[in-house]
Amino acid sequence: MHTKPEISILNKRYRMQILATLTVHIMTFAHAAGIGWLSPTLHKLQSPESPLLFPITTEEASWIGSAFGLGYIPGNIFFGLTINRFDRKFNLYILAIPLMMFWTLNYLAQSVEYLYVGRFCAGVASAGIFLAVPLFISEISDKEIRGALTSMIMMSFSAGLLIGYIMATYLNYHIICCIIFALPIIYLFGNIFLPETPQCLLKRGYEQQAKMSFIFYKGIEINDNVEHSEQKTSIVVSEFDELKAIIEKGGLDTPVMLKDFLNKSTLFSFFTAANLCVLNQFSGSFAIMNYMANIFAESGSTLNPNVSSILMGCVQMLGAVTVIVLVERFGRRPLLLCSVVGMMATMYGFGAFVQFTGAETKAEYNWVPIVFMMLVVFNSAYGVFGCFFALVVEMHPAKIRSEALSISMLFIGVLLFITLKLFPYFLFELGIPVTMYSCATVCVVTGIYLFFFLPETKGKSMEKD
Image (cartoon, rainbow, N blue to C red):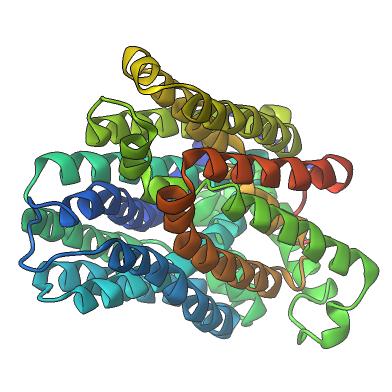
């Protein structure tokens, strides 16, 4: 038996895992920058100071938002079909294409249809990012830090949102498109130096390449005297042979059959994942990011909506760091449930403040909507959003994990379209109180189910069920 490495992200064993995670999250950052950019930009496009030559109505703005969900659905179907038929790296490469199309169409926009198609492409890219990236990270990382690395998606997403808010507020529309367009190019270049995951190579019968990939991601230095190093040899042989045996004997390289989905434990996992998806979308955790500036404008706050959105980006970064620090210490389940309770309380409070206070009170206490939204965003960042991908990836059986994740992401794509299409109606027609009360009630209903039935997946093997 070899000695387990110290559980610290500074451990030499984890360096390449962290570097690979940061590399693939360049795409997450670029994607999130587009989402953060949209919130202040939509507000500008509907104003006389629009940087484009054509006006945007409220109805068109809602379709720009919901076109993202329309792209997310076929994107999930496409990447669901390619994720196992081709290598993980192939999927990581091709997801850059729709995001580059998104920024190109924004730059060239001559009518609102350009923006529709661009957001559709952004939805396709998002489907690939949230399907291929978590699977890639989960396969290259040790279970001791897998939760932290998987949750890092929230940190890169939050950083992208914040940069998107800032750039949209202070930089020229067309300059932003040029700057962000460069990120997918950097991402593609960085991925050239990352090997395919050991699991994927073993399933395809490339044992030697899989062993070299395993050595790379475990941070094991190989030199001319490696065969004389008992410790290094022990690590390579014992851990790699264990991984190989699990894949060969565990049925992970056999075809997936319908019966693999139709058993009690698998169906239970799907139903629990569906509840997580409903919570993730209908709680408003994603829609709020897209309409942050509008929410502050509608709340009666006299503070600059765009500046308030930037502040929310900072809070989201804090939540993202929180989940990375705490997820391996306390587990996924406690963080998620605390997050649900926090979102529920603050959204009910925000709705009540807007509903039961007059214009003078709102002007005197114009900081209150910001405080409530800070709490909503923080709670969402460290739990409902921050723990979501770790839970959905880890809770499904190993043999059908990629297929199950694809199905879950397809379902969330449908919910995403519904949310982005209805959220402007709730916000602008029914008002902030009804919007916040509705989102909070979703937290109550799904939270009760998850309290009783959500399993803890901390430390679960990605090859064993």
